[in-house]
Image 1 (cartoon, rainbow, N blue to C red):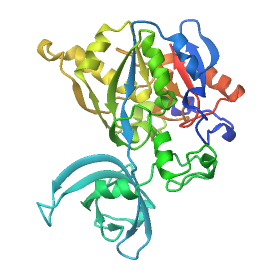
Image 2 (image 1 turned 90 degrees about the horizontal axis):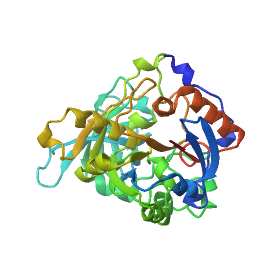
Image 3 (image 1 turned 60 degrees about the horizontal axis):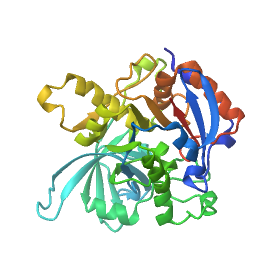
Image 4 (image 1 turned 45 degrees about the vertical axis):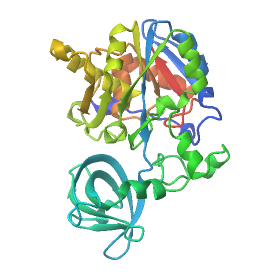
Length: 370
């Protein structure tokens, strides 16, 4: 199957430049697979499409302030580093008492400035990063010396999407200031779900940005159970597909954790409704492992790495419905929703979204596919 089959054109003015004034006031497209029908609602109407006995599964990952600006040790040129995925800790070469060095998979701009062995200085030598590997797909593996976590939370910026103009990865957009979220603290708060808990993501699980505490309370009062899992959003979620054939694409792995109570809730649910493609991938990874698990281990939680790649032809094992935003063409995200709803039905939905002026991507509107 050709990747170009999942390409489409859209007006650039539909790219959402700021979130809705109120989280649950974004628009909601309702796709019903059986009848092939499309409805246009608002997100707060989602309560009407949920039933007692349903299970709503939320990804409680929390976005890190993972954009760091440093300078190259040799020459002093500016270097921008996005921490994407934590690899490991190793004993410090200098002191086993003061700290341990951390190794991260990173995106670097401009990446060509750094070679293996290059060092990047952050602050007044508070943190030093050394490139120890450059991957074939363009990422750089960097070992950090110093108190990286402390430095990141003091000076790091939220890794907002670069297509939010005139936003750069390191400066809040003037378009957002009018929404009352122009300062660093409030901007961080708005680019998190209200239930974000476990820090480790390089990007927000954006389908969850539409929920408010009040809406979740209303959903729960209807007899819908709410459960959580964690999948730390990384390159697998937002990197485009460059291969001509979708089968030739290799997914990056992302770490996930599904508590035992969530697994039990899945087993009892009438319908499992996943919030976001990240929740879908974690649940479907769990589904495969649960089916093959020994009887004595079935009540245990699930954790590890997943590089599950879902594209048309995939047979879903766990998820009965999903909530998701509108996605970029030629990405694993558009392939996943096409696998769930059908390629032609998704194409019709996106055409309708363009005609009805829905807002696209991270700060945009949502759809529920049932």
